[in-house]
Length: 210
Image 1 (cartoon, rainbow, N blue to C red):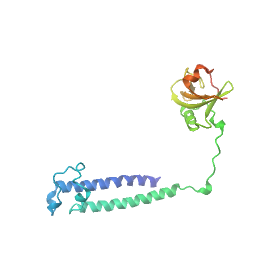
Image 2: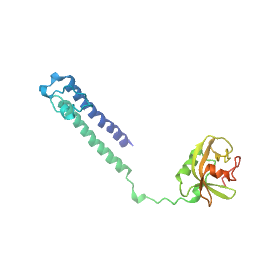
Image 3: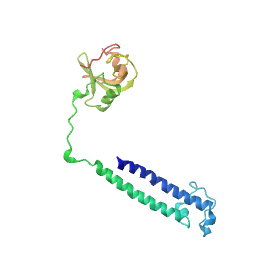
Image 4: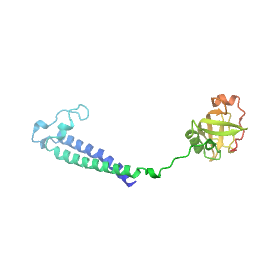
């Protein structure tokens, strides 16, 4: 982690140092013109960053501008090399030892079963993480219902209680889940408004964790 912090710090200075160097040269050649022995190098009647008259070449090459420009660029080059070294070490640090790698077990359907005692955020994570397959589901009256889309609500009630006619269900941590799209076992996916027209799951029903 120390290598990452150093790389982040250097990346900021890689931007700051050239910015300061170039603007210092620009200030020198436009505001301190008497310091330039060759008056042909002076830039007149220009709007820096707008008209293109003060290019880096015209600003930094004349004496004494290059006394600022060259050290600034040498320092930037040094920081770029350090940045590359730190990033190379970070890659080595995170390089996986393939001899210790193991295969993850296949996610089973049972892992998608919703426990209404869980926090709403955890349940929503399961719904989104297991979509579209195997999917997060609950059982009601012996039938399986897969939740396809949902959002967190703020309804309060007994855990597993259906709080509204739009199938908002109370869960742990005094939050709720609002189901937006659902699929009854053996049926096609439905928006919650269409589903609730003929559903046996009514307001006040309790969805158990069985």
